[in-house]
Image (tube, rainbow, N blue to C red):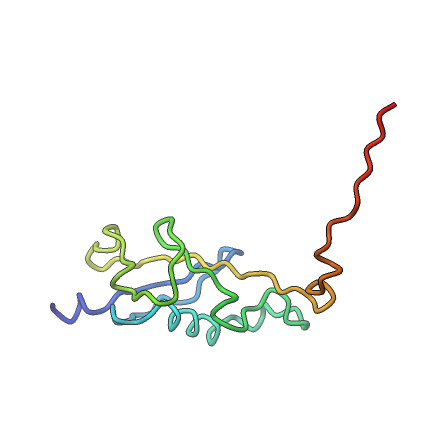
Amino acid sequence: MSGAQDQLEIKFRLTDGSDIGPRNFPVATSIATLKENIIAQWPREKEDGHGHGLPHTVKDIKLISAGRILENSRTVGECRSPLCDVPGGVTTMHVVVQPHLDNDMKSPAHLKQSKCVCVIL
């Protein structure tokens, strides 16, 4: 492989339409490493002061490329779409941040289903 084929230029599209990158990554880079890079480069102006909507770990992020959710254990090269093989092209991966539940919302009491009563008149 040539040096250009060993790298993939990737930008990360956030849900508000803004981007992180583009940057070049070796094709051997894991998806988990990409997510760590996203967390490190997350735009601080998007903070709401409470940490809501911000990714803290790789588990908080889903990366989507060519309509597929990418697995943390896979590499960039394994997940590459044939559409990415355009010389000089930039691959766009979409970033979805999982919502954080407050401690109160994680309790079993919150997860219980409410009783529902139907009355037929």
